[in-house]
Length: 90
Image 1 (cartoon, helix red, strand yellow):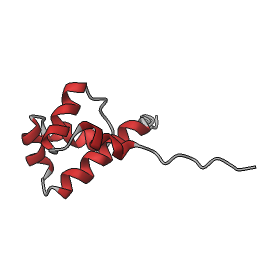
Image 2: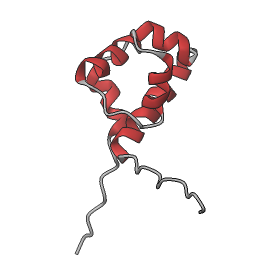
Image 3: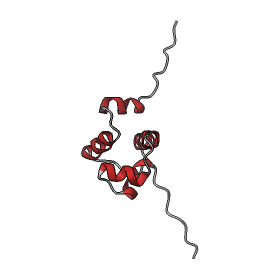
Image 4: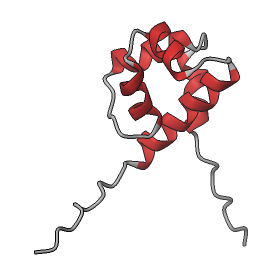
């Protein structure tokens, strides 16, 4: 009998965008993933999952991350904005 790999779980695009924003800002501050996890009080392996869009975080963890990035929540969430589509003029 041939074993097949389980189907890959689809990641929510919002979680992927969040993780990408965290990774981009973490790297801009010069943090390793482990050092940043320590600064947030979040395990490094869990932080890796966040950056890959694998975890749907609780608000308290989102705020820990944003505080460790030393920015305002509103500034962080601007990274998740999508460009608005231009409306067609008649």
